[in-house]
Length: 224
Image 1 (tube, one colour):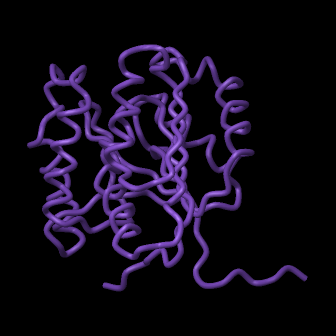
Image 2 (cartoon, one colour):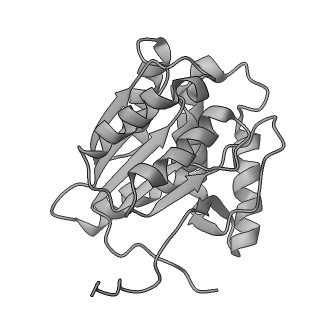
């Protein structure tokens, strides 16, 4: 199986409807990308810009800021957390669109990570549907979040993860999101189990899965 590797990643955009979506769906990938950048001794840190639509002004915002700092070691990180009511993105569509467009003017990412359009949670799904209308010329990958809704689909892209990265992801999730400990699915067994399944599918021990909206193979052909 051939691997599709991002050869140059200088700026990463992270989008989420809720605090904890990003580390749950892509925490291992964030740790892997940021650690690789540090190991290469790049002249500049990885520029990471994160936008979260809900949780602003609550303890959840503090959790999110601490978590993303831990999941993006060595990165030039900026985090914006808004206060949209949880579960109400469809009725705040115009605000979400304008917020995303304003955010887009502040960045020029090589890669965008967001939820995917097949997610049963309306906030995750609608944000993912907005992204291609705003980040029109960017590679956007949709992370998956295991939860009670039966919406898991087979992701076509798999990011291999080292065992220590999966362990660190679980540790950081538990450390930085105490507000979620009462949820039955929020535990190490859940996160490691899904990573193990994706690892089997990738031919490695552990992996995270991503859904692809659109991508080019090879160099773009110049317009005539």
